[in-house]
Amino acid sequence: MINQLAEEYADKSVVFLDYHYDMALDDGIPTYFPPEARWNVIQASEEGLGLTWAVVDSGRLHHRGAEETSVAYDTYTEMIDDALALPAMAALKASWWRSGNSVIVVATVTNNSEITLSPENNAGVHAIVKEPYAVYDTHTTIHPGLNGAMAQIPDLAPGETGTYLIVVPDIYPMDWEVLELIVLVDYQTAPGLKYDQLQAVFAEPVTQSIYLPIIKGRP
Amino acid sequence: MKTGKKLIALIVLLLLAGLSGVAHPAQSQESVQPKLVVFESVGSVE
Image (tube, rainbow over all chains, first blue to last red; front, side, top):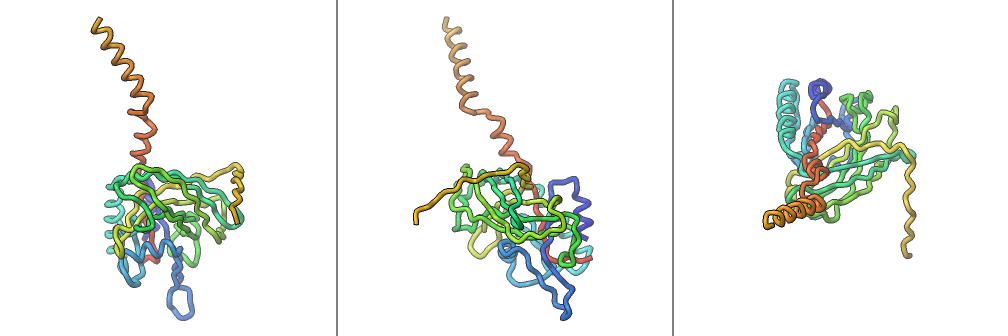
């Protein structure tokens, strides 16, 4: 059903990410291993467990436990349309390159919101690796998110720009050439409450070698 | 004469405005960067 939704929204600015969820176990109990940083964000939308689980805007809107296709379709469509109608509250640029079985991402964020992004509101820049159209037993759609990681934002006041480095480890795709890197910036609206997302982009792959300076710190 | 001075002052102001980025196209483009909506799911119904 989500595959169908992705086709219907193909001409819109929407990306679908599906995390690890495996039914193929002897005991019949599914396992789920979303990237930890994303699972923490998703869980903030509602405590407990109720797969299936879907969020937009980092959980500003969510739905869990859909068992009927029509319910899921109507609800998810409504969530996506609502999110599309809102403006981005940050400008975001990002680049990525492969380093062994890791991905390195450099992202620059301009905070256009009225909120200071900091550890106090768990603000972060997330990078998520997607292998579009790959079919895995461990994922229920052809939009698998393979892994993700987050860089905490130390302090970014409204109007300020900051650059962040994110390393996403343990990437073992079928095909490195087709990978997509989705980078997003979000924060928690209040302690114990939902997150909200300011903006997301597809990071651009870097095709030329990058040599980072070696900075020696004092012992 | 007064009109000439006003014209020169206006041109100087316009030049200064341009240099200081009052109407900087790159900045206005950044502020209207289209939003990318991220739909994330764990499990799904058929």
